Image (tube, rainbow, N blue to C red):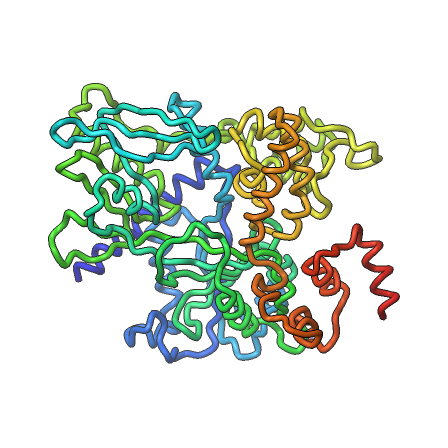
Length: 548
């Protein structure tokens, strides 16, 4: 019973924070409807692996109404969708055995931009924000109390001290590595759970409608969502130590493709390995308090704990939705433990939009089109990325020399990103490296690893001009960015060349859809991996016709 109460409180708190995030930041967030397909009235094996949920298909509509109620019905209402309507909305689905579809709503955000804007909003509010600075040791007084940290600027190599009355470790799944610097004998506080995601072309998902499989072959959830103009498919809870590498195991990619194929019209839509535009993994911290009593459970909620010897406080656990609540909780506790109550007022972040949110409205994209002559697709991207700062970005845009759009030279064909966004990020968003530009300022690497790789030289040229890089520095940046992109998944498995021993192996490796022949896209990939990429699609097409 105590577990249920704890879980209920966590979900209720997450709903509250979800509302705050969505209402305060409409430029970064949106609601997305998600359909849960039900193809049998009794579900076996049961969802979550618990016999109690064997009747889930019979009670799911009531469960989701209860879920709506936990947010005070501030979200769009959950509802049942019949087979006929589902076929109209999501024609890609194989729904011949469907009984009904349960639709509910969740919040969605551009997490790379949310992350960047949290840091920039803090800087605008007076915080000192240091990019690429790493803590390398803890400074302690004669009594063993922490009084500051020794830091290293990883761009310049300079080391310096930062003194403080209070220190907080907030390293997510990597919090234990910070705690080991504080105390090498510290007990673990984080158990990481990995989530793998693949990105497919937009046509694999319905416009504005996602899907959730609550009972996959191994019991995990599988999300199938429209995201940033693509289709995002992902799963969670693969246990293992946190790793900073983006690349997921190839077997995870194959498993996701196999599970997703079950829901597509089998005789029409063939989900191919070559359709994977990008693939990556991330880690969610599952927290436990090492200073708590023995036997305390691992938590899906966050944990705040203070080391009585050093006075350092750490926070870990939680989820994206509750980041603001987590910050409020840990700062409140540090204020009390450090005797700073007289200098601090109540928390006000629940009423503060992040950078670009003040004055934002849903008609901003139209205003950008009318005022600057950018394409509507680009205006939507700029508004949903920069909020009110989209106007400043457009002021930096260069003429295209075309009849339409009149303004805004694209960074790479097929995507709405503009050249001027690179310059804007250099001047106003603290971007220091090419790899940060293509991941955290614009999520191109997460959407299409091949497109990101192709954009690297141009991004490096633009950043070199804005930041005054030497030729040597620019080449170093290009290499580091390409090394990073190589860790992402893509249309061809990263380990494909390791298994090639003869021509037959080579053919089978690049015939990724197992059709028995190499198509145009597979030929381009093959030549790229062999080190002889085509200079253009026109050259590739000419070569393909000759071979054919």
